[in-house]
Image 1 (cartoon, helix red, strand yellow):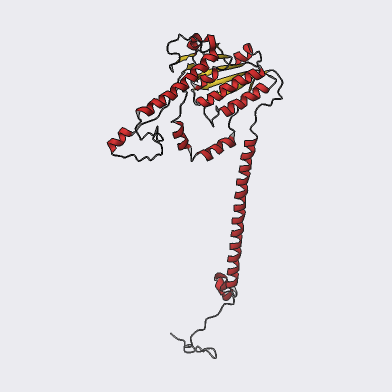
Image 2 (cartoon, rainbow, N blue to C red):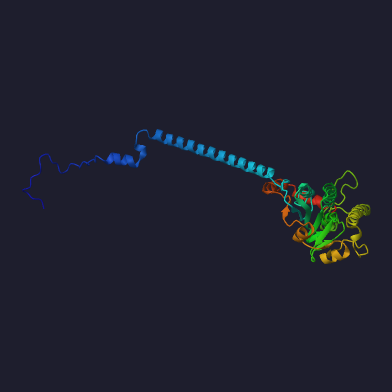
Length: 347
């Protein structure tokens, strides 16, 4: 109920709508929450975007420059490694036995290539401190050409420097590896070594029968009736087979002559299958004259050469060269393998 005695203040109208009281801090607070309410916000935003874009471009340029410099440093490092491949200096004058390893397949471009082996042998023969050279062999064979180059160089260096050179066999000395060993003064083996395999082979595959069954037609165009010789998808004629066999027989004869000249009277020529491609244990090899006696590197250095200190002269691919070969040879690896499979091999 309303008090009838109550008096309202002067100028007060109870039916007049109330006017909201504006806060003195309301406008700044709203402006802080909404930047678009500030004057000049468009320009400030554009400036921020522009500076952000410039910073991003600068960072991209710095990263690109860093990447290029890193690659440049990497290639300079590779070149330095390639140029710094070292072999024992010829200035070494203390008496020692020089060792050159022939390990793995004897092939161009490998660690047992003629390039590497001959370079190492030259350094060893020219070193005044090297009293004798040992070829440490563990190889199943490989290229007759590479083996022939090494064999000829052994004979030349022996005659020039008047130093002894011996072959020491570890696990295997077969085919092209034995071709090389036969040129040395003496061959030392372990009783369980594998020695011999004096023969030549040329291997491959023929898919003509499979193609006929599957219904595939071979379309090979050549200029020269024998240009497709040894193509695995084409039949081999009798004339082509005879030609290949004659070539293998000739290389085999060359191999036999190298062994006979190198081993001389020590070789037991009446041994059955001596030149048939058979191989023997080291103990049998000594018995048949394919090797001279049992012994290892330390034995030869100590008892034969009389210089117990052993120095390794082997040349190998360094890190840079291995990387270069992996990068450079990847694209042509299949082609190289296909060409190598169609060439004679002493293994």
